[in-house]
Amino acid sequence: MLNALDKLMLEKVSNLQELPQGAFNIRKNGHGVQRNTTANIDIVTKQDKSGIDVIVKPYTKGESVHIPVIVTEENINDVVYNTFEIGEYSDVEIIAGCGIHNCGDNKSQHDGIHTFYVRKGAKVKYVEKHYGQGDGKGQRILNPKTIIEAEAGSVVELELIQIKGIDRTIRETDIKLMGDAKLVVTERLLTYLDQEAESSINVELLGTNSSAQIISRSVAQDNSKQTFYFDLAGKNKCRGHIQCDAIIMHKAVVLSTPRISAYHSEAQLVHEAAIGRIESEQLTKLMSLGFSEKEAEDAILNGFLK
Amino acid sequence: MLELQKVSLELEGDKGIEILKNINITFYDKKIYVVTGPNGGGKSSLAKIIMGVYNPTSGKIVLGGHDITQMSITERARLGIGYAFQSPPRFKGIKVKDLLKMAASHNPEKVNICDLLYNVGLCAQDYLERDVDSSLSGGEMKRIEIATVLARNLKVAVFDEPEAGIDLWSFQKLAETFKNIHEQYDTTIIIISHQERIMELADEIIIMSNGTISAQSNRDIMLAGILQNDTCLCSTKCEKGIGKNAECIG
Image (cartoon, rainbow over all chains, first blue to last red; front, side, top):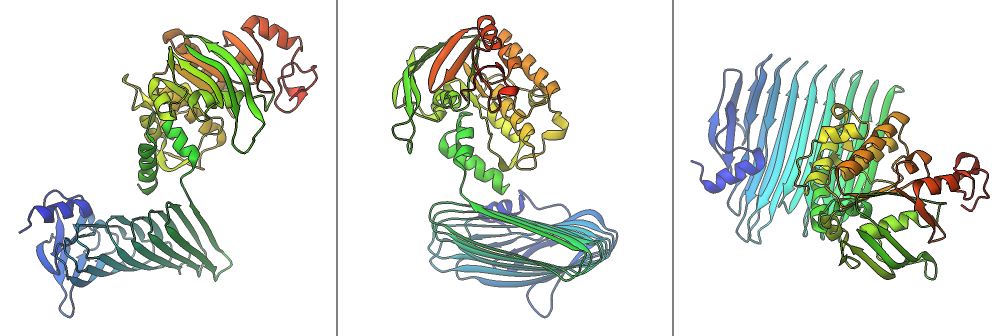
């Protein structure tokens, strides 16, 4: 059963105030605690290693799958392998996310390795939110790895969000796109105190007319450090765009390395990268509307990370 | 009523150069003032000193009998001073509707955001969901900036070159909006402009040059003087400005 803390964590990472409709699998402190399947979406426990297979039948439309993970104890080192089979011409939303509540002095860690097979013509939106809390000294660590193979004509939308409270993260995202496949990645990341975050997003545009758009926005505060690697490789007639922006504050450090590589004469690839502080004109404008400097700063940061 | 009493301004980094020199001026309620004059004359600095973006080196600023000289931008905004920037900043991730809601958030009167956009010549349907970022043109930014000021219930509204980047139709809409504010509210409107069409809205026209007020009177007298080429007001080229035969002091 889920207690009040569990419910709070679920709300933070999945916006769930009660058990969701449709398919779901809730994992707590390294174990599955509740599951539901539907006629079109099956969830099966892996036999060879920790994790689940989520199988969406072809032509499934308008259904969602919630697979939140919560860690509420210290000294947890949870590694999970999840595989998603998104059937042909289906259209589904998958809401993942992990919340760690650590009040102890020892670290809590969750590593999620997610592999997606998005079949021909399917459309999937994958939302992953990471959140940490707890007043202990133990670190809260989340290392997600997302591997996606998107078949011809499929559409993949990723929202990768680190809300707050994660001390260390290494995020790896590797995606292969076949003909006419379309990808949109939205990454939002906030670090503060001494937190460190590293994110690499590698996209191979393999098929004719495949397209990818990666929009990354981050805010680095206090003494935190962020490192980004973006790699967009066009290996056919394709279009790709990377836009990465970071707001840097206090004594934070942001390293951003966007790379575009073309292996085909009709590959059109663009990257834009910007790191900067909040502009004083932005603060002045909002203050001239009656906001205090702190309120103006918060409004700018919230908008940027929305 | 807003008074500037012996206000001077010397900016950091420009020691010894007075941007504003001993300015004495009173802006009365429910009047439209157009401040004009050559570039570098101190018009925008006057606007910024009213909003609190700049603090005067000396002198006093008094609003409704209260000394607001030491007040911050926020405090002045909450007292009812508003300012439309000449070059409005862009905000990645903030939508037009969100910015306008923020602008209206301190206004006790209910404000219709679609009406605000209409009043500056923009179709709400096309703009509410757009980000206030580089995808908007300079003219669109300018109109949204003006809308943020119109969203507020102000005692003093300052517009820094509101006509820049605005087409004729939108300009007419904007002129109507200024007139409506003038008729319906007690707001003091201060517009910095080089445009004769804007000056025609004024109750009083003020000419600033070299950090001082070189002339001030009612619209008809001032326009007659300007059009008789007593003063060059053009921003860059005499051929395009008012008073085109005057010697350029800009």
